[in-house]
Picture 1: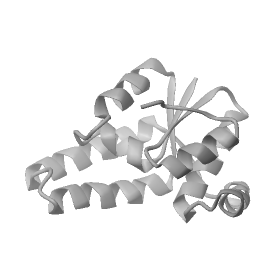
Picture 2: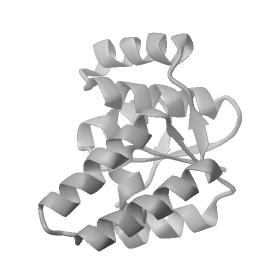
Picture 3: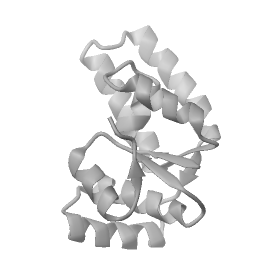
Length: 140
């Protein structure tokens, strides 16, 4: 089984937030954790925001970024390319998604061809789109 995490779910592996335990449990149960390469930049933004908002210290930010950066090599990373972009466009038009949400959903659907995919996200509109596209999702 593949667990595909968008950035809202991926960040919960590194910063203690609501539902972090749930995402960690799911990550421990699967063989593969996947995301799209845009998550790397999105994680930089999310961790920087957590620091700016005082949810993590400067030292915590540096430590968490270092751990995430090392972990990045362990993830199955879907590249942004023509197939992902074309499917993302269709999903954006069909479900009214934001750009990166369309990229994440398209990436998970493309991975779904290789095996069972469980989709992890914390945006209700994105989760409903994933369900309409036939993906199981982390139920919280």
